[in-house]
Length: 337
Image (cartoon, rainbow, N blue to C red; front, side):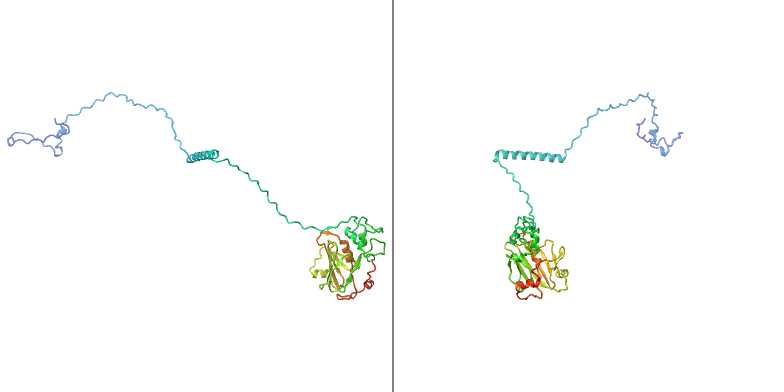
């Protein structure tokens, strides 16, 4: 028997002496395709294995492992690290500062600055308004004017004729005497008589009169304070006072239209201290200037002077000085309405 897997040795050819003898034999010839496989064909037949009894297969099942706690690794935030560093630095700095202040440096005296008060805004002073002078007896004349006319500042009717002293002065009567006595009779006033002035008027005898001027202006000054300035100029007699004021750019707003005691049209401002008179061929502009004081002391005297203005008939700005009696007789200055 051949070993399994090895090929059977090829048959040896018989010797030549056998060949040629008449020995009957049967020669089998192996097919070409079976050559080399004889050993395989001569193997013993395999015995079929008797199946053994099947044993139960036990598959070990692993027991579940005990649960292990999950340990999560905490991640430290960079922000927390930075804050921790800052806290440590701040604590260290505070400790150093405390040591320096407590032991290394002398005590410091900290003065609290006194807050400065807020600046008070500077307000422009309001212009002072003029105010009436003192009139103790409320008769229309201030105490200063009572001295001009010789009246009693404690009695509203000095002569007892039932007319207030201020009302009598306004109409050019004597407030300290019975009618027909006038201011001119008492010597308390004078009459303007100037060659360069085409009209007449009364003015307090104690006041001074300015020298003649070339621009048609004359000024009266009191001994106390204040003055009255008159400016006069020619105009067309057909032009009324309103048209003249408008042409000259003078506002007539608030100006009261009135009439003087001599019958001349007039315009007076609301405060009564500026008056325009229409004398036909002339216009007179009169202004009461208070001077350095705001006290209005001579308003009634100013009105009396405007009531006394009267044109000298046929006079011009270069008229000759006329006798006062002649002027009064021609203009009716010796009579009062």
